[in-house]
Image (cartoon, rainbow, N blue to C red; front, side):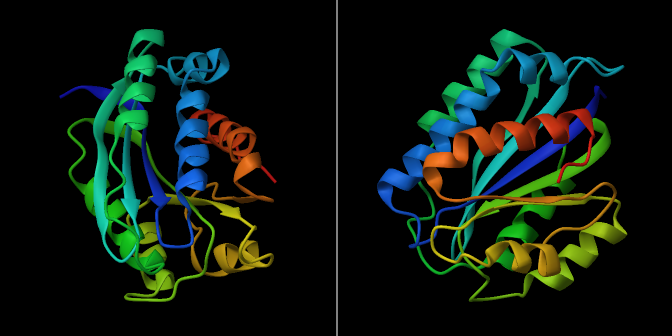
Length: 204
């Protein structure tokens, strides 16, 4: 079985609070981040020379948008970016079932087809949990399994959302949460976040 330095699950909010234009900014920002030379270099800088990336979209329910993909160079990063850009927006809106989205992320990490030195879930969204399983117990399950959950809170809907992520979402080795003011700032924020996660460095 192949070994990678990091398995990174992107858990992305597509609930009703995320408009069509905001979704485009978010996915465009993620794709742009994986096209950055510094992120591509970081992905191959570890002893195993590669990371694995997957993505899911969550609202009331969760759907896998990108199954596990090996990022081991610029060509692979471009294919990953294109796959993210082409992923349909499923599920089609709904409530902000943050805990359910995180649980789906754990399930996706649980069927990782490679060995990974680190397991990280990258949660991004613009609202508090408001339906289904609460996020705190899911976070605790992840921590018990050695999984790190980091958060990116988009503050355009709820200016104090970062505190909710800090209290209920993030946990595990080296965990951190970041915030950006709105989706116009998402691309810059997610690039910084991904770089820190790939390098295994905590950030403020």
